[in-house]
Length: 608
Image 1: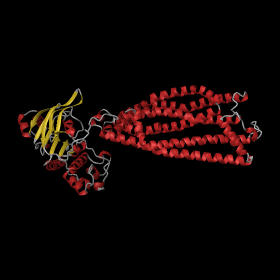
Image 2: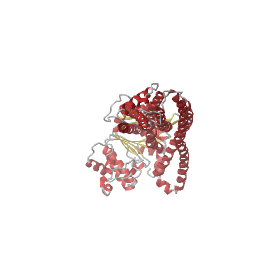
Image 3: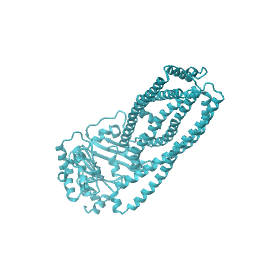
Image 4: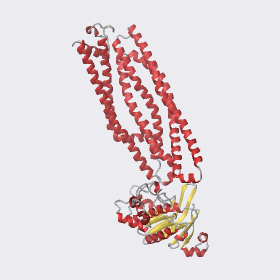
């Protein structure tokens, strides 16, 4: 899907409203043309003698153009009632025409506003849906700040440049086309002369637009990098301060900011050049037309061109200058908007590695076992993180995964809820490949407490009840008690209604972890994944939570990743993973007796 198709898809629901706006603008332009000819009649009425028209009877020119003849007849009918009455009639007509012209134009703009905001809403909705459905591997190579920039700044840029410019170009194009047709009807020779000198202006403007088209993507890329640095700085503020790296980050930000400012300034300077340049070129063309038109009238080379019509011609052409400038500016702006649209498109068309099959198998309960059969996984073809994994986890049993950091333990458990797909081999739940199931169904069976506690800037109640519809307060309280969180929650100013700040920043690490455990308890899933679930707890809290988790794990299938080996001595089976391969497996005492890798880990932690 290219950028044009992407934009057309967003515009499709609003084609009716968009077309109505075009029609309303068309009517507005027609009324504007009529008002100009009425102004010509007004001038003719006032200065008829000076313009060589001694009386209304002499005002009719048989060789005039169609517009000239109509104008002559109209003028003759109006003036027949007397000059004073004609003057009032013309002024009143001009007033009414301008009133309706502006009214139609306002209705068109009013209508198009809902189209623009609707398209932006569509882009934001599609982007957010795509971001939350893309696999975790997609974000491994992306800067979070750059993605936020695309979601915010680029979408806004599409509205401010692309949509606004398209609206501006359509309106301006309607005016230019109708005005040019009218100019041709008034005088063909003069209009052909006008088109002979226009290419000079067009060439100058096209050179400017070409520069903007090439520069715009670099501007947005630099801005995304700037946002990324800002986001990293806010996220890591504690580390930055503790390592006295404020000056380092200041310099890093200033380098990126200078680079962005430099290219942004160049683009702004070129964009600001478009308007005065097109206005100056337009003035030159007007002067050429005045010379040419005067020559045609003085030497009677164009008998259809009367002085009155020539005045209307010049006024019409001057009216073209502004929409022509807007066409030039709009085209320049569209080049910027295209760059932002391309950056948004890169996310919207990104491959969804985790794709649900067309008619997935539904699973509402876990009945038998989870099996890893000769399973391997690689983030890319040359770098295998897991190799030939064979594990069987029966319902109600508990297993632990131990090993050095980077051995692949977290990646292994991430395959169960399909955060990633296996590269080779199979992962089966109740004898069916997990890829055959509905992703939502599989994940609804799993409760996860991760090493990195993820909380939201919301109340304690909503964080525990996250993802649960109509959760009861007594159930939330019970879950908090099991996770040893109720006491510290009640010490908060508003209890369960306390807002905990961004990522739970108003709580300690242990408190955040206990809320995360309470959330898993409330979900009451048949499968539990505990990825360093007690790593942030102090000794007293850890003992209480371990007892709660031990009770919770009864009648549930539990998969535990642990560096504190004291927490997994009572699991049914322990798997030692090193460099992506299972090197040992067995119960705690069996592995100690072998005096292999597990024994070494326990010895280092003094629990052998």
